Structures are given as C-alpha cells and as structure tokens.
Length: 530
Image (cartoon, rainbow, N blue to C red; front, side, top):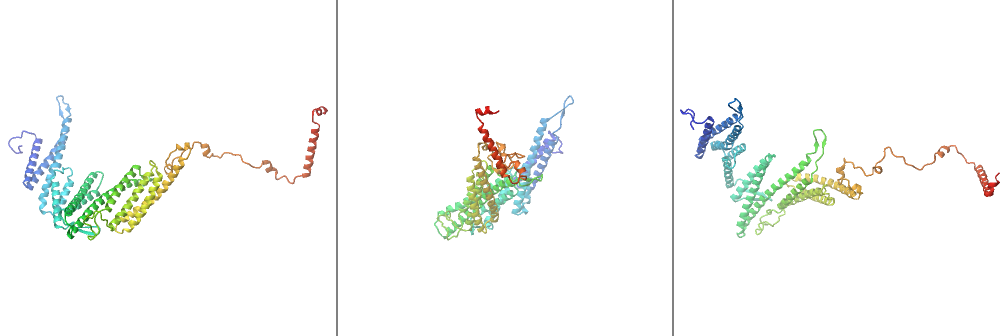
C-alpha cells in the first residue's frame, strides 16, 4: 500500500487503504513482540486498534445508502447492507478479541519492572476480567497469569513460609515435600477464586462457578494422589522411628485433604437444600395488595430432591467419620497406614453428632414424602416421623456436648425448629390418616368424594346425596308431640269437687233404661209397639 503524500495515487479506495494499514501495523506489532520490543509493539498495536475501530464505524455508517437507476428511482441495497453489517462485526471482533489482549500484554510488560509479583497477578486478573470476549486459549495474558501463579507457588513452596504446617485432629503436621506444599498452596488459591465467584453468583455466571468448583475438586484429587504416592514409596521400607513418623505425617495430610474436600461437597449440598427450602418460605409475608400470603407447600418432587441430597450428605458424613489420622504417634499402626484405626477424639464425636443430625433430617423428609396426598402411606409416615424425632433429640444432646463444633449453634437452632415441625407434622398425619380410614368405611355415595385431607378441604363444601335428611329446614318443620287436650286446660279452673251421689243415680237410671230396652227386644216385641 502507498501512504499519503506519495506522488502516485493508490489504485484502491480509502476503505481498502485503511484496512491495509491496519494489517501492516498489526504485523509490525507481532514482529516487535517476538523481539521483546514492547514500546514499538505497543505503538503498532495501538495504531491497528484505532484503524479497526474506524473501519467498523465507516462500515456501519454507510450501510443505508442507495443508488439511482436510469429512471431516477432509488434502488435499495439490502445485500450491501448485510455485507456491511458483517464487516462491522468482523472489525469490532478483531479489535476487541485479537488486538486488545496483545495491547494489554505490552502495557503489562512496560510496567513489569516496577511491580511486585502480587501486583502483577492483580493487574493480569483485572485485565482478564475486563476482556471477557477474548479467546482465553490464545490469550497471552492468560498464559502469563498461569506462569506467574506457578512461579509464585514454587517460590512459596521453596521458602516454606506458607502451608508448611497443618493442624488436623489436634495434631500439628509438618509438610516436608515441596510437591505437597505446592499442591496445598494451589488448593488455597483455587478456593479463594471459587469463594470470590460464589459470593457474586448470579443466574448468568452459574457455569463459571461450576468450573471453579471442578478445578478446586481437581486440586484436592491431585494433593491426595501425591500423598498416596509417597505412602506407597514408604510401604516398601522397613519400619522404624523415622519411617513411622513420616507415614504418620502423610496419613494425617491425606485425612486433612479428604476432609477439606468432603467439607466442600457437604457445604455445597447443604446450600442446595437451603435453596429449595428458601423457595418454600418466599410465599410468606404480605403481598402488594396488603393481603397475607400463604406459605408454599413443598411438592413431592421437591421432597424427593431434598431426601436425595440428604442421602448424599449422610454418605459424606459417614466418610468423614472414617477418615484416617488423629491420635498420637505412639498409637499409630504403620502396618495399616492408619486406614483402619479408629481414634475416639473430639473430631470423631463431632462427626457422629453430624451423622445423627443428617439421619434425623433425612427421616423427616422421607416421612413427609410418605404423607403426601400422592403417596398417602400414613402408617409408614408416622413411623418415620417418630424415628426422626428420636434421632433429632439424640443429635441435640450430642451437638450440645461438642463445645468447639463448627456451626454448632446454627445446627442446634435449626434442629429445635425441625423438632417442632416434626410434632406438628405427626399430628397432621394422624388426623389425615383417621379421616382417610373413616372415609374408607363410608357408604358408596361418599366413596366418590374427594380423598384429600380436611386441611386441603377447608374452603370446599360437599353436597350430600340426600339433603332432606342431612340438612336442617329453615324455619323448622312442624312435628306432632304428646300433650293434654285443650278442653282440660280451659275447664280446669272452673271444675271443683265432683257430685258423686248425683252421678251414681244418673248412672243407675241409664242402666235401668237399658235393661227395659233389652226385655222388649225381639221379633214379637216389634209388633207390640203401638
């Protein structure tokens, strides 16, 4: 390409000239970068960056023009507009994804001489976060950041200032090998990165959080493999004070790393459980219209998810209780590498108390699953709730006995709340079971009614099959009843003593008339009447 000011005019348009100048500047910057000429590379990359931005603006700004045909009509150029839009995306992506990382890398190299290692890492991390659209696989800042972190870990592991000692199960363990110290320092950095991402977790960066978690778990696996490798090397040696002490240290390091990994997984699963339960409690309170919201009930699917999570938590808690390590060097059995020895210390008591807590919670949610309307296995639900209440009471006593248990106060508060919920759930299940049993013995007409519990039928009214016998009439119907005749009620006040003699004489006269009438009866008696 020919620059401006030359005698001959270039054989291309202005847009093509700018594109050629940008490409030439980018290539000169690459050459200077290979020769470690940071100032020259920075200037050339800056020129290429400016030209790409101008090319993108010019491509986007001239996309709506049209051409006039022979008849004086303006023809649309939709094809050219689409092509220019594609060119705009091309130059914008090239500027931000290709040139910008190289420009920041040169800027970093120019400032590197007066920066400490921590400042270098902070600068590279900020540059990486600000340029999220670049390709991390080919990003020189990313490769420089990884090399700096590795170099920093090697220096820290060599100096022995960090992670040279561990405290696990009341034992202070010295980490002697450089590889293990580097692995533990790497775990520490990965954990800090994961905690920083988890603190800012949103729906959009959930995948990034998962990648950080997987990297942290991979770091724990690397440390465990190093410890197991060294234990296998010591297994071929004869037992002695020094060899046994080394085995004791490695067994405790292995137990520490496994415990940290299990602790991380348990915290993640507990967070998932709390997220499901938090969705249940979001319905409480008052709405926008001032009316009180009702608390949402967990569905059967949600109860199954919670029960499965507590299954995983229970397995991890039992794995924590069987971790190697603990005790003293005098009680250590080098033949088994501490894998089968069980040391009853404060750590084991806390692990067993946590197992009781998780068993109680698992039984509680299993009982709620069995008492749901879709399952309605009420006897099994009552048995599970009884077991959950018993386990929760034992867990409360065990956790209260562990004074130094991490998060013990929160566990006690949560368990006390769960015990109250278990008692209420038992009363509800017993009532629903009674109603369900009563409904099963009802008539065929009532068998067609809803089998849901009374709690779910508070606002529903079922019309009986014969309403005349079951519903009262308003006003009430008249019914006959036994009482005295109304004559005696009226004449009672006027009748005094009865005339007994007069009544007897009147009765005798009536009887005499009756006898005379009987004597004159017969066939002949009728003719004698005259």
